[in-house]
Image (cartoon, rainbow, N blue to C red):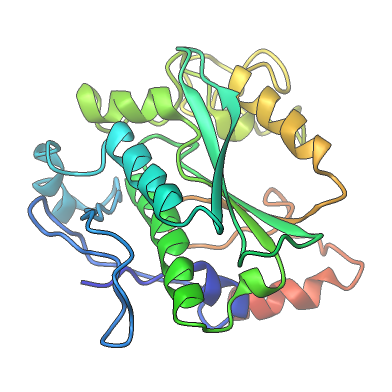
Length: 275
């Protein structure tokens, strides 16, 4: 089994849209890529695609006991840190409304760089494969480093946050599979300051896109925003990984207006004909 998206492919512009088949409970994959790859870990990780519109996935999602729960995902990432102490470090960057700690994992090639890229996933709890893809990308780049292949960490430090919405993610496992928002029913994806007062945003608390009482009203987004601001001179780019609709959304995602400053050509390379 292969997961068909990596940070390397995304950054290179080789692929702009990916599709991965559903993996039902019982299917496992270790993080080795072909005959020339070395196994980084004995941990087995299940890739579960969350496509709320695809009936073919419903049977898979009725049995959740053998997939990547929050603690298992954390244990896996922590094991990578233990096995690669000169390459991978872990730091707390935020907490959830239920008091759970959100961690970032910093990956280098052993030499810290002046610039970094930031990747986060699972702001929407039900999009399980987003977190799996983030962990896969982290593991695949570790493989490339071990096999002395050129990789993005030759130029940048990488920060990975596999699970932002930990509370909602736990709910999607334990009681409500299609939980999207966090535990207090705020959509973290809409709680950021940019375009917060956009007229098309639905601010009713029952809405699936409820943005909260104000920008950064939530513990999770407020602390992550502060953490990123403290690294403002370091962070060169940000990727927020979701698993809905197979699209790459460009800044700003609510308008078709061009970005300017020569950035449009860069995003056209990344997104191809869909830009």
